[in-house]
Image (cartoon, rainbow, N blue to C red; front, side):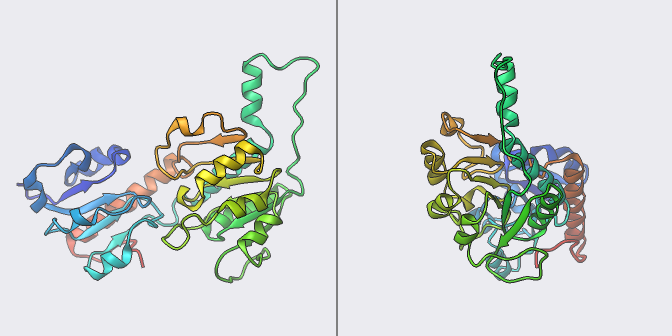
Length: 308
């Protein structure tokens, strides 16, 4: 037992947080199988918002007083369930949306201008005097943004600077500088590039369905920097393989880490390992908010960034 508040880090990829948290608190890591006696000590879970909560575990932690989400997004955390148990949830808002938008534009350019394919061709010796890769200009490309939140708006601003035209769709009207499509299907049909930037919840899993993918079409590009669960990944892969969809540029996947074999032989893709928001500055900002929220919770003070 210890006099210092104890934390349990749930996901292995959050392990690098350990030395920072251990400077203040006792830290256990779920994947290492904490000792049975830790069950009575743990006062906070440190989690990533793209993973569902282990509710059975939570109900076995009598001193638990906080779900501390390291990320900005908390879409897989059942906040209603937590609220009903008087268990607050915190997150890291407003820290990395601009970085995610930068990455989205990077994916878009890499796919449309064939930057990855060009690099591969050069390294394989396929660049010859009589060969030239011709790619479309971004000028006048029609970008459809799914979800005009902080990330979607930041991407839309960048797209305008690249001479693209922008439309968006979301389930609710809002004041915006760009026109809203009447439906997601209509947005896909009227877009050259469809960017997924919305939150994921139980109501919109598989939102980008086979019908939406086919509406985007053989010349279309799908970019996803939100959550992999928003896209019907099986339908996406099938459409890329048979040419019903032109390209995909993805930073997020249905299961993470994604199985590399799943993408073998899938053409016209640019894939990154969920790194859109993982800049040095953003991670430092998320860590700062995480520690502020933990300190406040253990001191009985108002939380810095509680989930509403």
